[in-house]
Image (cartoon, rainbow, N blue to C red; front, side, top):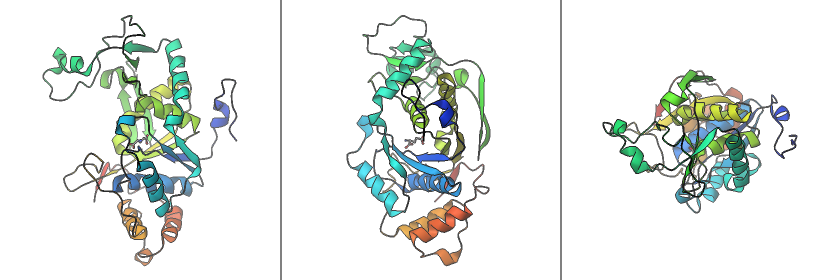
Length: 315
Ligand code: GLU
């Protein structure tokens, strides 16, 4: 049972428990593909191996990218693979008031500012001209300007020039300097959409998540999230960034690379293949076994030593 503080949010003391609460947080931008199922299986097995809870969150804030029937398709795929989640599904779109509240908290502490810079302006800045890529470090142009709340604006967080380190369960110690490597990053976009970085911090806190298992493609985002947790006084979960599956050209399987939806016809065969990719070394005798037999075996034997320090796995 999670206690509620006087602001109506889970109280920090009751959230810092030892019981493992993990989660899987797909974005509904298309049906689950093998790469996302791989992450789902890793986070599910890690949670269940530790007798933990496994929650499901739908990261549906980026509405222009959402695809109509992906949520139903995602839930169906998870069920077909026996990946049953605890509690009801958490939808980010039902927590807009929570993001607004915590944004006010940061603003009141003078930690954020309004930014009216357009992408075009930033892409054409002299320091970025030599690079083919989009600007990566925002040069704090609006940080000291007074910008009217009526002007269309994004909200940025002030970053500081110090090194933030955390210990990833698979990737070891990760150290980043937020100001030098990322600059003041966006919490709320100019189109009004709450940025992933910020939403995920609020969600993990509200859901009481204390163990995050997700793909290595999000490793570089983690220091920004830990920074926000520290500013908001939220506990920092343990992190484990698992490898991501890449295709024969070395590209991460994703909706952008047109990875096809997971085939749910023979989930047990696909699941066996995923356990092999996850370096679980399932015995041959399990091949052809049911999904629940495979998961039962994998929960008991879950190990991560062979997964350590690899960021990609080829299919
Ligand atoms: N929704 C994100 C994605 O699908 C994952 C968020 C997270 O695990 O923090 O890539």
